[in-house]
Each structure stands twice: as structure tokens, then as C-alpha cells.
Length: 172
Image (cartoon, rainbow, N blue to C red; front, side, top):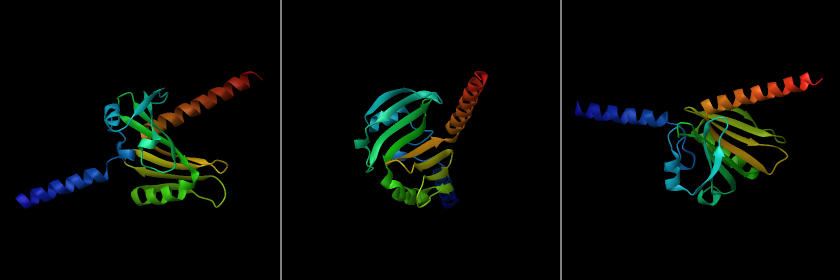
């Protein structure tokens, strides 16, 4: 009975870890708070995110151990929980990052032509992980974004585009 209980607890712990959201740079999406991040890194306020209505901060890339990292922005929700980690890196890191992320997360979309824009999307728990390397750029983006925040972003962006079209059409 005792061994069965221990085995059950170990199994439940493993299941919990499997379904946990990613923790880029040691900050778990949906769980980490600004205080958690401040305890690990130097951060600089960057305003309020218009989609999450939460605080945004810039991290010092030199404090993060990822070669080629140019910038990193973290976005919190109105509840104070981490909703996104947005980073910009040297484009030559695409293949390395793709290979590394492919081993950790479920690939759901990819477009990797020999010449042209490269894009991949992974899912883990409630988090979307994307790599986006535009063809005519020296930089690429690697973003970890909570699915709910991504949904708000897409909805608001679509609404703004429709409003812009309506405004333009009304002037004709």
C-alpha cells in the first residue's frame, strides 16, 4: 500500500510537469510574477501592454545566457502573471533554435524554404512558441505567448484593420 501511494504521487508529479507551460529563461508562462523575475534579473519598465493590460519590462540580454540575443521583453497580464516572453536574436540562430525547440515541444506549423521567410510554431500547454525569421532581415523573433493573449492580440488586430478599412472607405 505504501509503495503504491509513493508510485501514485510520483506519477502525478510527472504528469503535472508534462502539462506545465514552458519556462523560457527560467520564467514559467502563466505562473511567474514580476517579483519572481526581479529576483533573477535586472528589469526596466517598458509600459503597459495594450493587449494584456499588464506591465511590460525589458530584460538585459547580457544577463541571459543565449548567444545572439539582442533584446527580450516580458509581458504580464492584469493578474500579474507572466503572459509572454518576446525576444529578438541574430537570424543565424534559426536552425539551432528550431532543432532545440523541436526536441522539447509539439510542432504544429512550419514553413522553412531554402530562400524566403522562415516560420515555425510549437505548442506546449497553453503556450504558443514561434520562431519568425524574415528573409530580408538580419534578425529573427522567438516568442513564447499564452494562447489567451495571442487570441486577444489577433482579435484586436483584426478589429483595428477593419476600422482602418472602414475609415478609408468612408473618405472615398
